[in-house]
Image 1: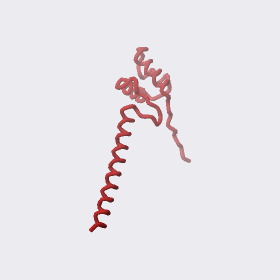
Image 2 (image 1 turned 45 degrees about the horizontal axis):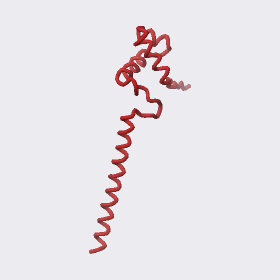
Image 3 (image 1 turned 120 degrees about the horizontal axis):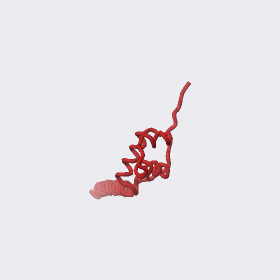
Image 4 (image 1 turned 30 degrees about the vertical axis):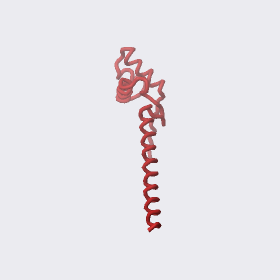
Length: 100
């Protein structure tokens, strides 16, 4: 018999409300976590992420923070340009051999 545990996913609104209970409500993180039915370590991580960058703390599933999205685009551009350069180098070598 195989027991599979599924990972729970919580939305941005749920996370922000939980954080408000800790920060604004002045309640203990452990109490809030128990009340919500989550592990205290999860709540600590959410609070830490929120304190680092409140506006972009929880971008959502499959979405990136603006700076991470820009980095991803720049890496893709670099990959494309490097590929184009390599193709041009090969073409130059091929055409220089045929002229000899």
